[in-house]
Image (cartoon, rainbow, N blue to C red):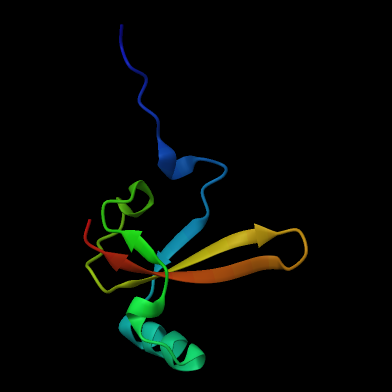
Length: 81
């Protein structure tokens, strides 16, 4: 029996994930007056990040569709794990 390989990169329910550059990360952190590790975490080995080159401490912007607000952005910090 051959196991079917699932390609998560193109899944319809996968939200858009984008690594922020250093300047953008600093602006977001300053806007909300927080440190990076006060953000929710996302593991470096998360399947949604496999196509990106990320390191611990990088900030990821996730954009999702909302029925009431159209597009909503939220942020996570990359951690080892």
